[in-house]
Image (cartoon, rainbow, N blue to C red):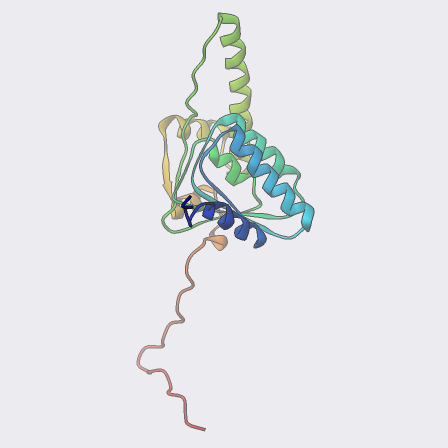
Length: 202
């Protein structure tokens, strides 16, 4: 039976990243993904308390899953540096702001949106669920306000409007830190009017 030579390449890639203390979170963060992500973070911390890089690529998240990961990040002793590429939106921003170090690649975008939820069941069950979601949303918005230094009502209104930010705007908003912005290092400038000196033969 012919076997695909590329089978399992993704698992091998993740394994190599973990050896370098890099954790990748991409796509939709649901309960299952939150469990795997939490396990990876805790495993790396159990090995040694050294910095961990958390790559957030086009991350979206369900609200309960976000709060799960936020809780894990809150108790970790190993410093976590979150770096955003692509788009990060909605509750997933809670994962970002729960990391002490936060940066973004130049192409990143940050969108504040309200989570999309659907309720079903009896009136009593729907009412109880709405109250639970309100509490979870308050937890998320208070964390965003705490980290960015903005008012909770401003965060809530920006989420209602679906406000989108570039990397530079996210720095001004307080979501990420300017001195941590990920970018290729610039070449040292050449002084005008004086060409670089040629190395002299020894």
